Amino acid sequence: MIFRWWSSDTVAVVTGANRGIGFEIAHQLASHGLTVVLTSRETGVGEEAVKVMQEGGLNVAFHQLDIVDHASIEAFSDWIKETYGGLDILINNAGVSFNVGTENSMENAETVIQTNYVGTKNMTKAMIPLMRTSHYGARIVSVTSRLGRLHGKKNRITNVSLRQQLEDVDSLTEEVIDNVMKIFLEQVKDGTWESGGWPQVFTDYSVSKVAVNAYTRLMARILEDRPEGHKIYINCYCPGWVKTAMTGWAGHISPEDAADTAVWLALLPDQFVSVGVKKRSVDALVSRCERLEVVGVWRVRVRLKKYCGKVIIRDMVHLELIKDMIFDMRVWRSQIRVEG
Ligand SMILES: NC(=O)c1ccc[n+]([C@@H]2O[C@H](COP(=O)([O-])OP(=O)(O)OC[C@H]3O[C@@H](n4cnc5c(N)ncnc54)[C@H](OP(=O)(O)O)[C@@H]3O)[C@@H](O)[C@H]2O)c1
Image (tube, rainbow, N blue to C red; front, top):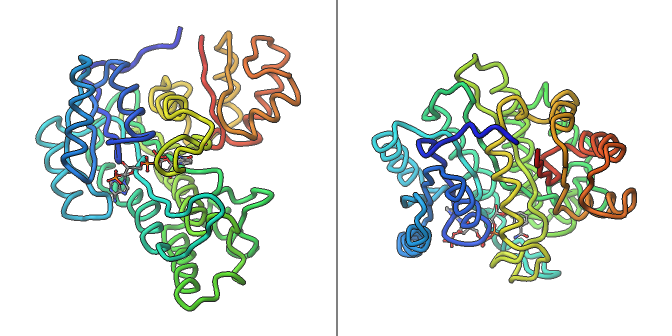
C-alpha cells in the first residue's frame, strides 16, 4: 500500500482546468481528498466546472487565472496566500495548439510559445515562493508532449548546436532556453523557419514543449539543493494523444487516463519522488511495488508489447526489464502507475 502523505489540508492548484486533461487532473486530485483550486482564464466556464465537482461532494474552489497575464497571476498569488497560506502542488496544465490533423500553420507561433512555455514559467516562478514547507516536499508537474523530445527519431530539432545547448543540464540557463525561442520566433517572422532545423510536425507546439522540458530539467537542477522541509520536486510528463478539444477529440486516450500520471507524480511518496529520474529512484520505486503498470504513451506500450506482449506486468523478471526501460526513456516521457 502506498503511503498517503496528503490530507484535505493539502492544496493543489491546476491551471487550465475548466476542461480536458486539466479538469480531470483537478477531479482526480479532489477525489483523493485534497483541496483543489480549479483555475481557468474564463470565470464563467471555470465556475461551471467547479459546480460539477462540488455537487459530487468534492472540495474544489475556483479562481480566475490567465497564465500569460501578469496582473491575473498577481491577483491569484495574493488570493492563494491569503486563503490557504500558499499551496503544496502546482499542476501546469494550461496550453494551446492551433494545428489540427496534418496542418502546420505558424500563424499563432507567438501565442503558442507565450502560453505553453512562458506561461508555464510564469506560474512556476510565481508559485515557488508560495509553496508551503513540509516534510514531504511540494510538487510541480507540467503537462508536456513527446513532440518536444530532444531526441525523438522523427520530430526533433535537427540543429545540433541548439540541441546541445538545451540538453546540457549543467550549462543550461533560462537565457539559453529563451534565446532558442527567440531564434525560432524570429525565423517564423522573417519566413525562414522551414530551413531552421525545427521539428517538422506541429512545429510551434513542438518547440514550445521542447522549452517546457528544458525548463523542467533546469528547475530540477536549481531546486535539487533545497534543504529538508523546503524541498520542491518538479517533473513533466506526456499524457499521450488525448481525446480533448486540442486534438479535435481525435486522440486515442481518454482525459481520465491522461490525467492519471499527473496525479501519480504529484502524490508520490517523498522517498519515491525525484527531480528528474535517477536510476536509484527507479530502483527504489520498482523494488517496493508488487505490481507496476505502465500505461499510456504509445512508445512505451509498443515497447512493452514487443517485449512482454501485454501492458500490465506482474512478473518480477519483467519488472527488471521495465526498470531499465523506464530509466532509458526518463519518467517524464512515460506513464507509470504503481500499485503496491
Ligand atoms: N490532448 C493531447 O493529445 C495532448 C497531448 C500532449 C500534451 N497535451 C497537453 O495537455 C494540456 C491540456 O491540454 P488538453 O488536451 O486538455 O486541451 P484543451 O482541452 O484545449 O485544454 C486546454 C486548457 O488550457 C487552457 N488555457 C489555454 N490558454 C490559457 C491561458 N493563457 N491561461 C489559462 N488557461 C489557458 C484552456 O482554457 P480555455 O478553455 O479558456 O481555452 C483549457 O482549459 C496542454 O498543456 C497540452 O499541451 C495534450
